[in-house]
Length: 210
Image (cartoon, helix red, strand yellow):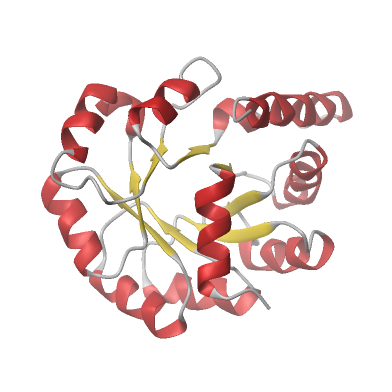
């Protein structure tokens, strides 16, 4: 059983997290399998994916070497359902004091979404372990660099618009990691050919770390 610090160390060191947000529950397992086949060590299944709790539980059982969390956790009720299904970490798009307190009480890592200096400060006060800068690309790297000024010791994950063309720029700007959604996973329908392409794309993204 991994401890909170073990999971946080993986999130910090692996640096790339896949965001699995799908419209059809039957697509989740094959997409997760394709990501894992391509070398993805870290992923979140979002709570607005149908059957997310079931899919988290299935993924934890089948891919026990991968760290699997829940994304789009906007309130405590969703956090409870996620942790009950076996989520190893939580990711929120928003700042939420109650969610921070709950994650602390359960000793589960929390990446809390924030955009402004006030939001970043509040998220840290409320117990966030990592700040999810969202939406990262619309805000831009100059904004991120300015934001890091007063929060230099704070770990940031850049999420929203990161792709193969800019991922290295975000690392060089100081992001501890990035979250990848559509630029990695693409759009339905998910044919066998698309699953092979997803595995290849995953390997390409992971290669940016070398």
